[in-house]
Image (cartoon, rainbow, N blue to C red; front, side, top):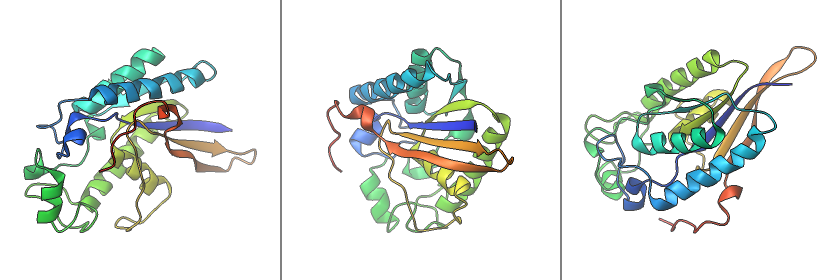
Length: 218
């Protein structure tokens, strides 16, 4: 039997993504037209299963691209939308608004390359972010036991879920692909003996985006 279910929808393409900029709170201006279309397609796909087994609510973090994605999903499903700062992405410090290529060159790699070193002045470390985000996600799971929850999420939140629920050591070099508006689903199962475990039902599912213009490869 499935008890708790967590569905992570990565936000649609944002303007900062299209421009190759670090999209911190100062820089995120929201979704592109393609990003809106991506989020709408994800919402329509969730609406089909919502008719059979309803979701309870949508959570979104504070950055505009998450807010807009969450609004589209909540309006389509006609369920409550809750904003929570615990779903915010990494702190980018002085990198906010700068081209990612320049930030990675200056730091000799992206956030994952040197996971215990900030990638810019005032930024998180990657491992520091994962520890904080894992603690926050654990709180969400405890608070929403027995519910079906949709998250309008950063890609980093998807990585956090996998790190936490697969019990991957912090600092592991392994990574996960996460496309815009992709769907990732975790289900908490309980068998007839009362034994429980988390099961990854799907990761980075983009079937619903097949009719949209694909994003250019970076």
